[in-house]
Length: 220
Image 1 (cartoon, rainbow, N blue to C red):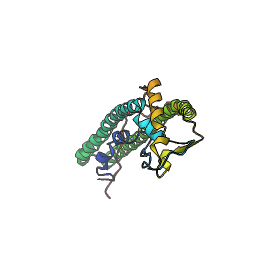
Image 2 (image 1 turned 180 degrees about the vertical axis):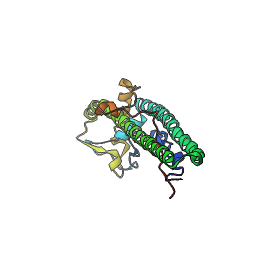
Image 3 (image 1 turned 135 degrees about the vertical axis):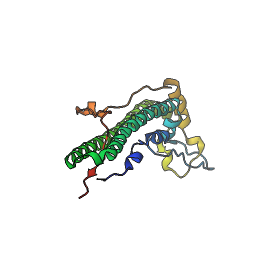
Image 4 (image 1 turned 135 degrees about the horizontal axis):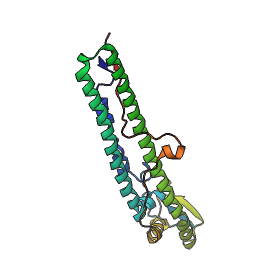
């Protein structure tokens, strides 16, 4: 018997989501306020970086901390699920000499089914993490919006530019810091759990205890 997946499983059990949680809170967008310009500020023109406001605010730091906790829990769940499949494959390899062709085929098919279940679970957890992160950023964005309007009114901003889309600007035109200060005054922490897509979509939940298997084929 030859396994179609010799042990790519070992590599695939790592969720690699902790790294995602450690990356930018805005889903991979690198905060950029542009280089400072030595020129004069333009009256009525302001710049703002939403990415910086989220990542450098107290609530943004709180969000990243919680996302890392969720990522670590998910990693542990998937590593355990993957290890179960890996152990099942190892046991099947050890017992194959004592199995009849039919038994070998049945156990190989069961192992394959478990492996495919693991892949579905891993994909679901990845999508849930991304949706969780997206929803929390939207919550922070919603809190920023009225604060930005207030700051824009105070600075008499006739035009607001995205700081990350400019080549440079005078620091006097940047209203990101005042927005962060106001955000820190109204929102410093954020609480949430991982989104469960199976519940949202009304589908059957994927059992964490039913991991994902490895394809096996009889040698002719």
